[in-house]
Length: 148
Image 1 (cartoon, rainbow, N blue to C red):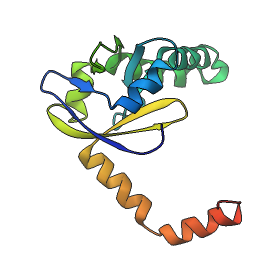
Image 2 (image 1 turned 135 degrees about the horizontal axis):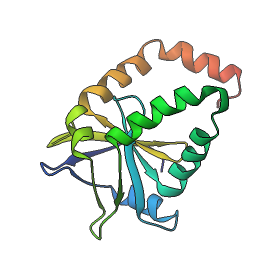
Image 3 (image 1 turned 180 degrees about the vertical axis):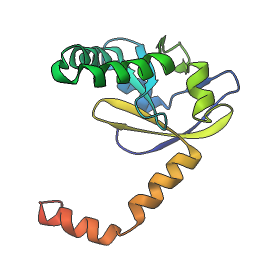
């Protein structure tokens, strides 16, 4: 789905996904997801098939096996499997939601490359400010590459 969506995580760590995001997840043929982080800044909701493709990449890291081990440690430390319930909610891992300040708070969601990104309000505002800085020059540069 295109766009950024505002939502609220309840005090129990449940996030009711916007209807468009629910439909997006259901388009993968399952309600199973893996919720984790790659950077301890942004939570990520992976449809399970997308996460499985990441596991293949991590397993085949070759010369970068230590890097893959480190990333796997973080994704497993903060991550867990979950299934979207009948009300379109997912339960975030306790340590992830506390680390990122997502509990009982307004959050923002967007999708990119098959993944649903989940930001705290503070992180979203910082990313928005960075995007706004020099926006006209950024647009000009991309127009040179074909942006309409």
